[in-house]
Length: 169
Length: 189
Image (cartoon, rainbow over all chains, first blue to last red):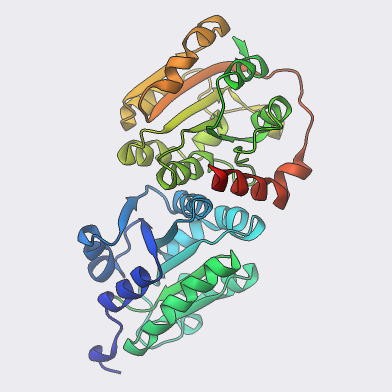
């Protein structure tokens, strides 16, 4: 695969906006900084809420769902790991839609996360599986159309979802 | 020092269509006082997350005032929330922290720094424009309406001791019905 085949930030943001996501709640992640978070700062379709720690974002996104507001939590996988208790409580036990876009820092391009040389990357999907949280990897240009339906499913089912960004964009 | 149940009793007289977000033993006391208050979002299960949930509610419903009844041990688990809330500056958020100096629901062990901590000072340094501290029930009763009425985000420390042990209604608080009741009430207005 060449770099030309990789997913673009504009594709992702168009999918997110088309699904009615108004709030982006984020702690910066180098995987998605250039292609997503910096453009979001000036994108009038979104309201950016910068948080100090990712578990704050889990609770903010869950609470916004009570107000019929859609949100996306844009974080790094390290932040996901740090937020598991909040996700367990608000997302899984209270059955609330917490839609997360998670950068897989230093995952090798075109290598499945479970086969990464990085320990932290390798354990992400098994942990999500253990929690019953659906996940998908987005890395290539052709992956983008699956983003919107994943967001819709999270809100339709009132259940968390993890959209894993597999390479720096 | 105030008793928490007595302080909540005073607060409850001022709560009508506001959203209330209580935690742990305070949540049990609030439920015992106001079982009818459908706009209560019980924040139990992930300690420290109440104020973050309240921020989400405040941002999502700027037409509603949101009152957090946080705990001191809880807030210590999520101190960054003070900075996040202050930077978002929701005018409709009132953040109380009940400072009893202990992890009341976990064996009454002391919180770190219990004799030195000044939560109102932390909130002020984080950027809350209005901060208060109350340890006298009469003063709290005299000023609570003003605290609830000022443009937020507002922070107020309530230095207190636990009240009479409230009934423990975890079945309701953890049940789906609590959140369904809240959601329905929020939709109504």
